[in-house]
Image (tube, rainbow over all chains, first blue to last red; front, side, top):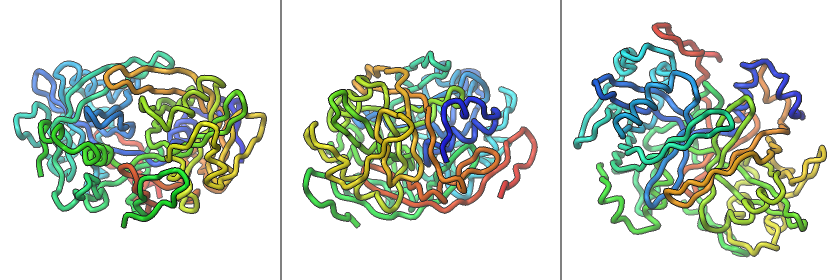
Length: 210
Length: 210
């Protein structure tokens, strides 16, 4: 089936949103926790996280020009700190519910019954039910003029994870941590590992690391 | 287990690379096909794709300052076109092999035995074995000064997918298309759908769309 540029443009808005959001493949999905200067907690689901570099450890995310991400971004810019919390099968419905457009003064922790967790002097709240939690320090804001979105880049400064998920070589077994993935706007998936492959070199057969 | 900023900085380089690449969660992974001005084909695996917007349909990817992505980026900037091809369980080893640092004049299509496919006057080659293929037009290059990486933004102008994977509402069933996901640098996973959830509204119970 072939859909060309004109057919994409002609699609009804919501169909296009579902289609284009599906095309990128499976995505990382996480809950971003923030605290405003005046003490309002905020929690929002994001599926636009991506690795930018390991040294320093940088992670990026894209903000749309509209709510509900508005509180998250203004808290990040105002305070400089946020948390990224992996989503597991136990909390994916609550995680999805954070995408509803609550008023700014409402804490999505409270309405979804997820528990804010403060530790090691980190300013922003972690999600207690999350098995992999990252404390992130804001580093850079990049405006993407082509569609008025914004990229926020942060440095990972605190990592919490179950010790039995960490391999000797630094790889984290996300399945053991029950981390899930998503596709499109609203589909959640668990995973089954197919393989881990050796570092690829020209004209050399790759092997399984399992 | 708690790893703080100082402990991250002290990690041996390859361990840190594996660890930080794992922290973002499951990632979309795809093969990017390009053709240079003088006719050299290039194919490279990327796990840093992300959705930027649906109208216009924009997709982003991050390029490291070093090879092997060099050919892909220079071809994109030189010619303005590239393809993004989903990876399935049949071709993931060949896809992984494209990350080896071949010389510029070597076609990764040829060495991995993946078949370049040209259609509908699109300049860059698609991967014939891929079930979901996107033709993308280069739109914007954003330099990320903090670690010398580069973000490339493109507009999706051609979409190829199996008709039976497309739902009425625009959602694509990626599992039916055999699209896989990855974690870390080298781990490949298939997925099992847990649920599709209704659009979230404040104080309203979300329901399953399945």
